[in-house]
Length: 99
Image (cartoon, rainbow, N blue to C red):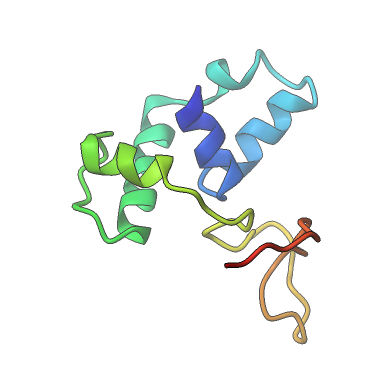
């Protein structure tokens, strides 16, 4: 289930999960095919400069467990971005911490 959350959170399988959350279909696990999940894993691996295998190995798990910002890796394709917008959605975390 963590893999599905990470895939949705960072933009690899957006529409299938959104439909499940709205109650359309039989739930997230029933809507995601093996092929779609493999493609999502490959996309994550390519984005992280890992060997693209489509299989969740130790390197992929380590990448998924690293702390990350809340922005998706891939810009959302369903909404057309305005010309003046540098990157898709607005960042929802307002309290910023740095060291």
